[in-house]
Image (cartoon, rainbow, N blue to C red; front, side):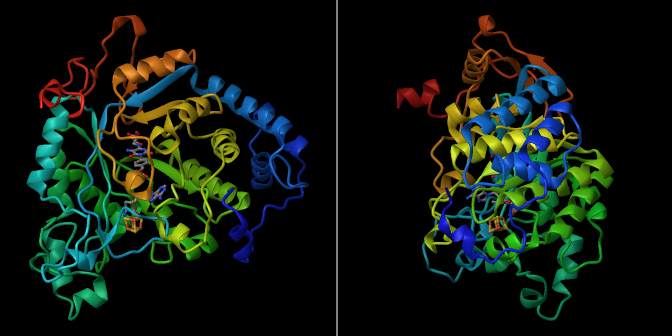
Length: 456
Ligand SMILES: C[S@@+](CC[C@H](N)C(=O)[O-])C[C@H]1O[C@@H](n2cnc3c(N)ncnc32)[C@H](O)[C@@H]1O
Ligand SMILES: Nc1c(NC[C@H](O)[C@H](O)[C@H](O)CO)[nH]c(=O)[nH]c1=O
Ligand SMILES: N[C@@H](Cc1ccc(O)cc1)C(=O)O
Ligand code: SF4
């Protein structure tokens, strides 16, 4: 597993508890609320010895699978969606991320080649238009923290009023860059094609959208919602324990700020998701403490629609290049992450198995370890691919129906908030989306599969 360096960080929080595995398992089976120590016992299959005990692991997975069946039944959901990320330019420098390109490479006077992009609002709109024609329900959009990107023109005026905006508030005017991302509100408005659901603005991005002002997260999310935002992704969470963030993303907002951002989004009336990015330098105590932060937030607010465990994709990342990790999570760790998330988060209904991170075979296996959602069609992917992930960028509705039916579960197309659901029958193919604003059941085709491309 992620190897020897994990012991080298001098962490204060270690996977040590006063609980026993047997007690923790008994509580989990009885549906009692788990403590952090209970969670750590389950996640490690017992802290009294090193390594995963295969027999105990099966008992944890079984308990989680049973809990999933009790909480949400045998349906497996997925959403017809598109990822449309606006820019890869970022000034934050997280060590697990290969999505970003250093923002100064995008400046007009830089002649260093790079593989990044910045889309204009018009380009974003065209991309979303095409996907809405294909039947998508949702567009997911997450971006780097581009110095010219502002909430709106009022925000730009405030940032320009600083004496030295680049140093004080991480702002440079669009004229400095080859391409202008304009503003978050303009981009969201451009992506709101025919009322398609716009899922965007992580707490990190919301923090960027309020830099240099005294605006609250709620104010910012309200303005974003007015521009077309429907819900917010709870990425940027990584591991919500300061000593881990200090190692993997020292330039990022802290744990409290992430929680404040999520609260602001929910105060503004938006649904959110929550995530964990695991399998790097952190240990099981960090993972379960993270789950506790999410469970406490959900106790207070109730707006977290799903929890998404993102297994760290290590290949092309600075963490791996610099020898801080030697790999990602093992299969056992992925299974136990999903299972303990299901058992610990007794107040979050849906746990996502992310095929883009796990591949089909493991993603299906994880549906028997506590997960009940199989992500979305996405049509395009940059974060995982650029980090070295190899599981592609598209799953068709027929793929979904076949895979989910093959494991004896029931495929269901969902809305982002899970409130609208449409069961699919394997005998009624070919299958396509029905919930999007222009969806009519026609199968979605990617450029690669389209008849036009085949003629080339
Ligand atoms: C790339 S950022 C984009 C949005 C914004 N810049 C932010 O940080 O919130 C979105 C999320 O992708 C995930 N991510 C980035 N690199 C990853 C990797 N190598 N493996 C798994 N997840 C990754 C992280 O959880 C991160 O918060
Ligand atoms: N877009 C990606 C997701 N998840 C999006 C979800 O499918 C869903 O639409 C959203 O969470 C709201 O319910 N998950 C990934 O792991 N990678 C993506 O690129
Ligand atoms: N796009 C993010 C994942 C993501 C986005 C939105 C979510 O709601 C959940 C997860 C990634 O690939 O890592
Ligand atoms: S995770 Fe987000 S903030 Fe961090 S470097 Fe990548 S794009 Fe930038």
